Length: 131
Ligand SMILES: [Cu+2]
Image (cartoon, rainbow, N blue to C red; front, side):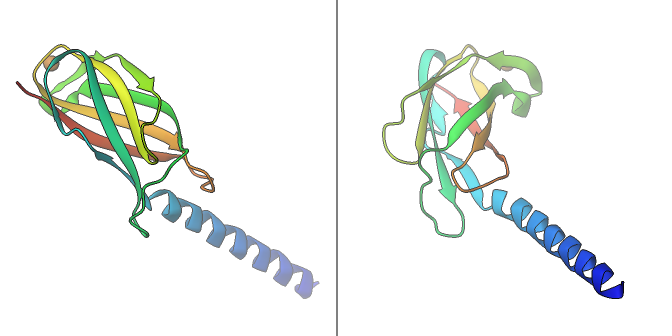
């Protein structure tokens, strides 16, 4: 009986370790702004790079399934801009077409599925719209 309990305990411990590992792994990825400053206006091109922190390498083939671009850094969280994804130009670089109707600081929030990573990878980059 105690042997069964021991096996159950071991399995639970392993499951916990794997769960903790999964959380840590999602944090191994970071989004960086390639175009940190862009002119305000319509049809503006912005690019972000997805990088593996542990290797320093760009991460290709991520599926970015959620984006939000708003002016929360300038206390205008309700002011959101439309985002249109574009085809990747090079591995690990993700491009979008956006309308930035106001100069200032915009937060670009992304959620992505990364190959080989069970957890959703989330990130936020600062985009400054300035002439
Ligand atoms: Cu605004």
